[in-house]
Length: 155
Ligand SMILES: [Zn+2]
Image 1 (cartoon, helix red, strand yellow):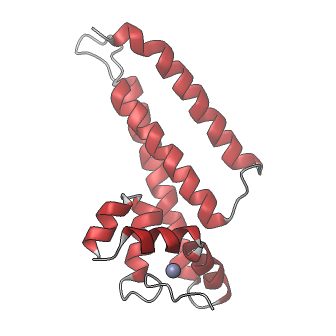
Image 2 (cartoon, helix red, strand yellow):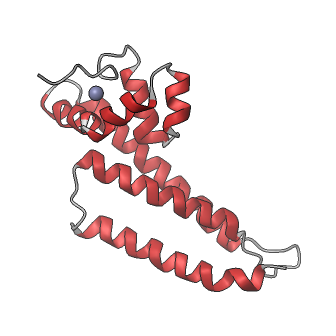
């Protein structure tokens, strides 16, 4: 028999799932906050318990909860793209282009992580439907642009 998952049994399970899936907090931070071990949290994630929860939710009265997680993820993603755009569009007081590339790069890293988590939750395969791939290509394109720009920005 499979061992009981201590995270699934945890009284703050929804908050923990949300911290992982929505906020993208580091496992160490979450583990410390909820006094759980990183290994149990890892097991909870890699065994797909967060994803299962969402699937179950579709069949139960928890649909709203799963929707909330996904729509929150969407909000986070939108915010990241806004921050990214602002970072890229930054200008000096004289109106010259002065992109905040380190920040832009950070948002891309977050988006990348976000995409991974979202794919896990939705159970999307690595080879895949149109949307995630489109986003992926966008990110790859942005990274390429940034990498091209970075040496020029360095002093
Ligand atoms: Zn679990």
